[in-house]
Structure formats: structure tokens, C-alpha cells
Length: 333
Image 1 (spheres, rainbow, N blue to C red):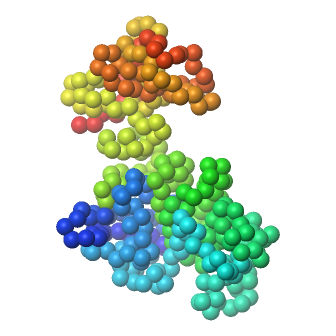
Image 2: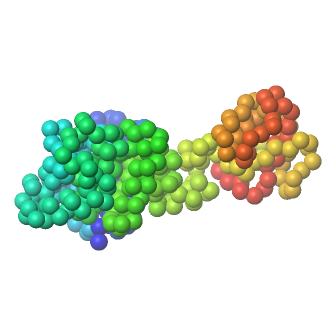
Image 3: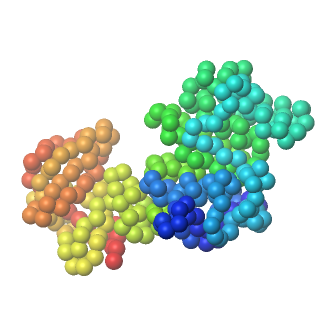
């Protein structure tokens, strides 16, 4: 069972500074694909590096498959890590990069050949086995980095923003590659990203971090529809949740509504149970399959974003009415 358990793990880089990771407690289930997401400096990469043994906690405990690994060196943890910059040996061919770690462990030659050939076949690397990394595209290099992790057959895979150097099209392809890899291997995977699209599309469970702490840990759609606090509501979602300040929809509390749950009307007449506000179209973002309409409520000037399907006939300066239905509201105290 490759369960990973954090128990009150704290990491402080300099005395007197705020902890990079602060009292972090979490259980990653055996075979789970868990994503750590948050803004730069939130502690997600430090958390991953402590699992890998590249950083040591100042307090707390980390265990893998029931064994305390808090002070173990990386080589004794049965993990494999895929980095943002691929970390391939530039003087070695693809074949040599894939087999290097196995040779260091004195794995029998026949077993090395079997594993390397199997991984190369599954990742589409067979035509490139005798090439050096400099002769590969970014996506091919990342496949080699994935393959090098797979051949080791570890208990836990760790991914530290592995797709951030790729273009948009290649990121989509590699996301699918990694998801297929998880489905095939059924291994425990912990994936770090600042990209919420990656988090929402890849993770079975997402951990949103800020200031070294967990703000919410839940399945993607639960985090999207029922964020635990204002930070999560504003971070997850493109565009983020509209957060109406106290006094607009509630006398004393912040009310969150996703852009797709707001609608624009031509007249004040309601569209059901809810609130209606006069507004002016500020600007429009046309995305092809959908349109984001930014409006300013009058007279407060509060900005709201409405997601409409397809194209819109509205133009900047148009007078409209914003309808906020009672359904799909999230209230924050």
C-alpha cells in the first residue's frame, strides 16, 4: 500500500520568517492522483520536495506505505520524480537515459531491456531511442523524463510542474498522457502545479494551498461548486467566482456566484427568484464557444463577469440588468 501520510509537517527556511509549509497534515490514498495547487510561494513544491527527500521538515512526520521516511535519503524512499526542466543527461541517448537508474541498481540486463523497451513502446519513444536530448522536441523530452520514472516501478510518482515549459497544444497532449499513465499503472501520484486547468482536469482530489497551509482538500467539482473560503473561490475557476461584497446580496456576508450562474436581462423584470441590478457593459471577451461579458453595477461600480454561450450581441456601454438567482449561491462569513 503506497499511502503517503503527512503529520503536522512544517518547514522554515530562515529563522524568524513565515514557514514555507505550516502544520501540513494530509493522507494521500494508495493509488490516488492528488494535485497540489496554489499561487507561487504557497509551499506546494516544498511539500513535494519533502516527500522526495530533497528537503527535510523542521518538525512533523512523513510516511510512505507505513514506513517513516522523514529522515531517509531520496534513494531509500522508492519514489520517482519528474521535474519541470526534464533533468535528462545531455550526453546520453534516450535509451541510456531510460536505463541509467536501473543499471546503477544493478538490475539484470534482461530485466533492464524488458522494462526500457516496454516503456519506450507505451510512450511512443521507439523511433528516438538513439537520439540525444538536444535532438528532441519539448514534448519528446518530457516523455523521456516520464519513461525514466516509469522504468523504476516506484511506489510513488512525484511531478513538479512538469508541463510548464510546453506550449498549449503540447500541454493538452501531455495531460492526457499522464492521465492514461495513471489509469494503466494505478500508482500513487502527487502532482504540483500553479495551473488550475491542470488541477481540475487531472486530479482525483485537489489540495488548494496558500501561505504554506491547506485551504481546501476535495474532489475538483466540490472545490469548484462549494469553495471553502473566499481565497479558494477567487483562485479556482477561469474567470474566478464573482464575490459580491456585504450589502449587495447579503447585509453582512460575502456572496459568491460563478459567471455561468449569472444572466443579463433587457429589462428589470425578473427571471425567477433572485435579485436584479441595473448595470452597464464594460468590455467583452469573445472566446469562440463562449463569451465573457464584464459589467459594472450601478451605482456601486462593482464589477461582475457573466459567461454566455457562443457570441453575444451586446456592446460596451449597453445598459442591461444583472439577474442573480437564488440557486448556486455560496455564502462566506
